[in-house]
Image (cartoon, rainbow, N blue to C red; front, side, top):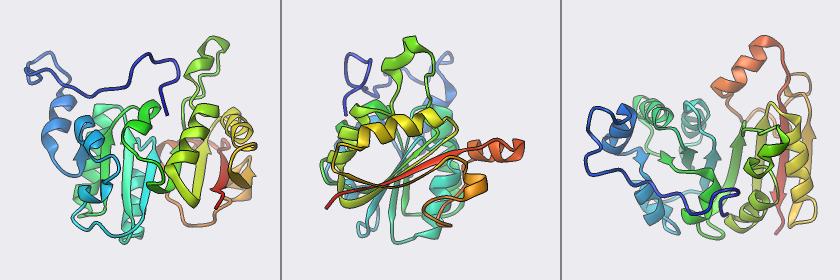
Length: 236
């Protein structure tokens, strides 16, 4: 997947003097944290060989796009110790918060990579991913922001390439437009559209109880506002 309105691939290169006082302190912390943090350079090196990012290389590879503060990533890794989880997050602070949750729980099967989700083809090879979770992508609802919208044909094409045949794609979002755009992008591709739910609080998640509520999602639940879901499978 290449980057929408971006003219060149995302590269995570910190300046040699990144510890200087005016630099984001979370940039420093994320680069010096060590596992489970994966820097951009490391993520690019793991392309096609993500098994080497984990002490135990066995088990399927599940990827979360939009890891936020890490509630879903750490929660699902704890539920499924035989699955290797990689979260993708761009903001330095959130990467560190994710890493702290993973570390505090003693999880060896979860990693958090600091990378731009528009350029996932730079870090995942074709047929490398066994499941994909997308959580609350920015809808970029204004007309002038159309090129910034991730849910669409570019993302769908990348997912079809990166996911193994039979792999599942799950979207949770607070904007129904994201569901509509992704569904429209998937319908003519190598996908089985399994279900869509327009109010998960009222109608439940289409994939059942095997889920962890994100911190962002919890805010909508507490306010009584709906969230939505789309479930699809890469055709065999």
